[in-house]
Amino acid sequence: MQTDIMSTPQQPGKVSVVEVVGVAGAGKSTLCQALGEYPKLFRLDNFPDVRRLENAPFYLGNGLKLIPKLLRLDRSGSRQLSRREFAWLTILHGWPTLFRKARNDGSVIILDQGPIYLMAELLLFGPEYLRKEAAEFLWQDLYNQWRDIITMVVWLDAPDEILLDRIRTRQQDHIVKNQPLQMVVEFLARYRRQYEVIMAGLASQANSPKVLRFDTGSLSTQAIARQLPVELNF
Image 1 (cartoon, one colour):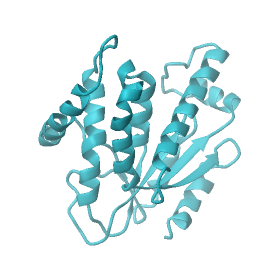
Image 2 (cartoon, rainbow, N blue to C red):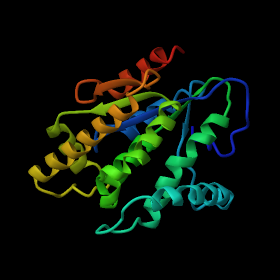
Image 3 (cartoon, helix red, strand yellow):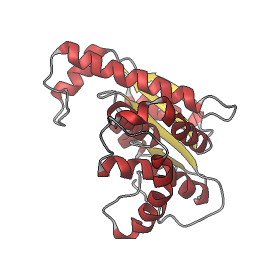
Image 4 (cartoon, rainbow, N blue to C red):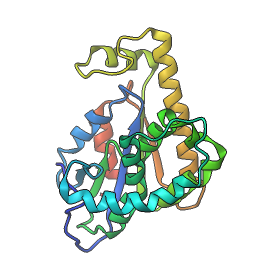
C-alpha cells in the first residue's frame, strides 16, 4: 500500500519508520511488496516527488536552507551537483521535519529508497567535495537528524554468486548487469562498505536505529516479512 507522507493527515500516535537497504539483487523491492500484504501493519512510502506541483514549497524552502551549507564547502577541482543530486540533498535535509510532524494510528512506514540509500548514492557517485573532510559536518548533521527518525533498518544481502544471478536474470536493467564478474563483485563491495560507514554514523549515539541483517540467499522473503511484525512489537 503506497502512501504519501506529504498529505497524510495528522493522527494520534508517533510514526515508526523502517528502511530496507541492501546491494543490488538483495531483494529490497520484493520484501517491500511482500510487506504490502499487511495493510493494517505497514504503510509504504517514498520521498517527496519533485515532479508534483504541491511539493514545490518543500523543495524551494529546504533547497534555500541547504545552499549556505554547500557554500561553506571547497568545491575547487570537483564537478558541481547535478539537479537530481541537489534534489536528493534537499530531501535528506527537509524530509525529517515531515516525519516529525506526521502522526498516525501506530502503523509503520516502510521505505525502499529512503535516506540511507540517498546518502550512499551521493557519497559513492556524487561530487568529490562531498567526500572530503570539510564536508563531514554536513553528514554528521544528517546522521543526527535521521537517527531520531529511523526506528529500524532491515539490511538485506546475499552471497555474490546469488546476487549476480539475480541481477543478470531479472528483467530490470542495471548498470552492471552485463559487466564482467570482477567488476560486479567490486561494485557490490563498494556499496557494502558505504552502507557500513553510514550505519556507523547512525549508530554513534544511544538512540540509534535497530539494525536487522538478513541473508536472502538462505532465508525467504516470506520468512523475513513474518518476522518484522514481531520485531516491531505488533
